[in-house]
Image (tube, rainbow, N blue to C red; front, side, top):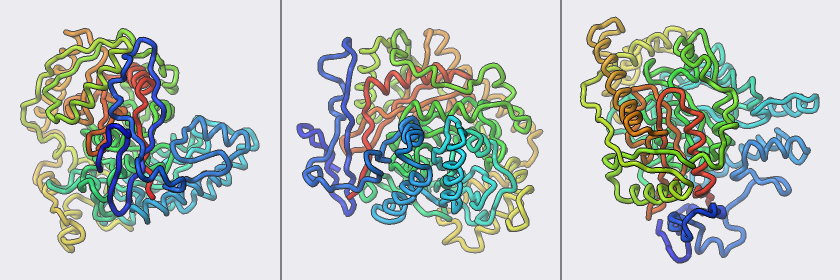
Length: 536
């Protein structure tokens, strides 16, 4: 992919070219006369000369590409669109571009009942039924249980027949809000906790997720992970929103890599019940969308206290069911944001982030250079918790699932290593070698240290500098807020010379989602740098 400064274009020369179109940019009166992000305005040079370049999907004036929750609901309410037609449009796009064409390979399973559910939604809408996500097609990462005709595999062949007996908390809350679960997305196998050296977005059951912005040019793994399919699918307009999960960077990484918005909530804001676990200390689910508003709407749907996940009790009195009241255009005005340049070693990423900082400054933000204490203590917390938590999950699966313990999975994979463990299973074996008990003194000490040092690192720098948030590029620095259980939100910031997306990520202390949304929304509205990939 080649960047043309004067034509403001990305030109992709490959078997399947990505066509990038940029929305109009607007800036407040107090912004710089020449926008700092003008280098990131992109369109396509050669292919735009062809009016038929890139297939669009729509009915009449409604186009599914880049559409939002609000636009869809308006079209549904006015009769311009039906849920059945909307679901069919997304299915058509998935078949044309995910399964064929550039073959992004982001959607692992389509819900065979999606059109039937959509038809029922249309019928109920006529009777006045409403909801914040009513009629909105949503994709779920394939480690989120759904009680339907789709298995939950975590990307492993061992769980290909794992049909859940009940919805996860996340799936149940989405259905309650009126969402249509369109399918499950491919992911890094076992949430990228199977081995070392495997590219992000690879699973034995689904293969490799390709990068939508360079399906034939960007290397395997550049799509980010472990919520790789969710990120690529939303960037590619295969659904309106998606759900990802994160233990350490797994929402932030694929969101920033695919030029979308991702919210990694405080651990405790969203119940993990019914999600194939990695770490009880760090796991959380969160929304991935093309806009901050759509991510905020979806986040509000997912919150609540769940007796089966005791950590959610910490959210009582702090969680909101509607975060849209914090979509403030002036959210950056007077905000004090800290940045540790030690996390910005990549020169191209740094250039994009510095341009983003200029936008923030133009809106009244104060940017302070700070130093965040690094975590240097040894920790095997994830390996201890993975074995314990996974064994508990597997023990409750149906008789159709041939593995009931982590040890069973390791042996299952060894039976056909070229197919089931192409890149090995080092993390599985390392976890299996540890104690299954979470009363183990070594585990308890390491977990206490994880919490102590990670929270001290963030709390101290924010308090000492009177900060509203910390700023990172992509998922750089994600490990510290992940260990602390603290929230982050990433927003498209721009593109490198080769066309690789870069995200700007805001992080802060527990249950500061509302403030982070204010900052992210204000930045998004004054930058609007997201570019949608379309293929010819």
